[in-house]
Amino acid sequence: MVADFKVAKSPKDIAFYASLLFASFSVCQTMTVMYWGRLSDRIGRRPVLMIGLTGYLVSFLMFGVSRSFAWALTARCLNGLLAGNVAVIKSVFAEISDDTNRARMMALLPLMWNIGSVGGAAIGGLFADPVHQYPNIFGDVKIFQVFPYLLPCLIGCSITVFGLAMGIFKLEETLVREPPVRKPTVSSSSLATEATALLPGAETIKQHTVWDLLTPTVIRVMSTNVVMCLAVAMCDQAYPIFAASDPSDGGLGFASRGIGISMAISSVAVLYLQLVAYPRLERKHGALWCYRKGQIMLIPFCLALPFLSMLASRLEASINSQVVLSMPSTWMNMTADELVLWVLLIALLLARTTGMVLAFTSINLLTVNLAPSKSDLGFMNGAQQLAMSATRIIGPVLAGSVWSWSIKHTFLYPFNSHMVWVLCAVLTGLSLQLTYKIPDSVNTFAAGSCKPQSTEQV
Image (cartoon, rainbow, N blue to C red; front, side, top):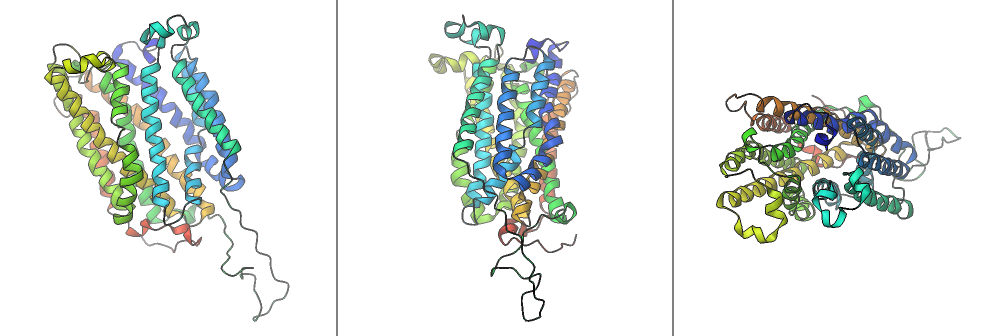
C-alpha cells in the first residue's frame, strides 16, 4: 500500500513510511485512552464501547478509500483517537467474572486480539488489490480498480457493524453504582455513626487518586509491561517487513499472500492455548509465573527467526509463497529447502504465539488484580493501555528505522539484518528480569473485597 502511494524514494525506505502509518494509530490512542477509561468509570462501559465501535466503522471506510499517504494517515489517526474500547472491555470482563472464572474470562481478550490480528493480516493479504489477485472475479469491478484496498476494509466494517448491533441490542451495563451512604440524624456512641454502612457488609466505593493507585508494585508491573510491549511492538512491525524483503537483504522474499497465510497457520493453536491451556496453568502456578514463561519463549523466537533468511537465500530464486501456497497441486513439488523453511517458520511462529498468549493474558490479569476497587478498573486498564499505546508509537518506528539502517550497511552480526531481532530479545530479557521484583500477591484480585490495598514499602 505504501509503495502504491509513491511516497518512498526507494524500496528500502518503504519500511520507514509503513512504520509511521502504523505508529500514528498509537500516537493518537495515547492522547485519549486514559480519558475513555476514566469516562467509562463515570458514565458506564456500554456508551463508551458504542462510541468506539462507531469510530472504528468510520475510520475503516476512510482508510479503504485512501489514495494518498496523507489520507491514510488521517484515517489511522481518527481510528486511534476513538480507540478506547480495548481498555474499557477489560473492565467489563473483570466486572462480570469472579475468582472461579476470571482467568478464563481474561484469556478471552488475547484470544480475540490474536484472532483479530492474525485474521486481519490474513484478510489484508488475501483481499488487497483483488483486481490483480483475482482478475476472474473482480477484474471488471471499477470501485476496486480505483480503491484497491477497499475490499479488506469493507470486510472489517461488516464485522464492526455486527459488533455495534450486538452492543445495541444485547449488551447490558456492567458498571454497578453503589448508592451513597446517608448520614444518621442522631449522634450517639450506641447508634450508627457517619462511617457506618446502611446495610451489613455494605461499603461506599469511591475512586482513588492517581497517587493512591501508583503503589510500588503497580509501578513495577507497569514498567515490565512497557518494556515487554515495546519488544512485541517491534516484532509485530518487523515480521511482515522481514518476510517481504529479499533474501539478499536478510528477508524471506514472500509475497503479501504468503505473509498472511504464514500468520494464519501459526494461529491454529490460539484457541487451545487461550481457553484450555492458560486457565489450567494460571490456576496451578499463578499469572505471574505464566507471564515469565511467556517471555522466556519469546526470546529464542527473536534470536532464531532471522537465520531463516540464510535458508531462503539458498533457493535458486526468491521464495514466491503466493504460488506455493495458493495452488494445492504445487505442495508436493516443494524443494527440500522450501519444505524445511516453511516447517521451521511455522514452528517459530507457533512458539511466538504461545509466548504472546501467556504474556499478554497474564499482564491483563495482573493489571486487573492490582485495582483496589472496581470503580478504579477503568483507570488501571486505561493506564495499562496508555503504556501499550506509547510502545506502539516507538516500537514500529524504531523497528522500521533499525531494519532500514541495518540492510543499508554491511556490518557483521549482530549489527546486520539480525539487529532488530536481537534488540527485541534484549528488551524481552530486561522485562523478564524486572518481573522477579514483583511479589506473588499480584496473583490475587484486590478489588474482590472493594477495599484499598495497604500501603506498600519499596
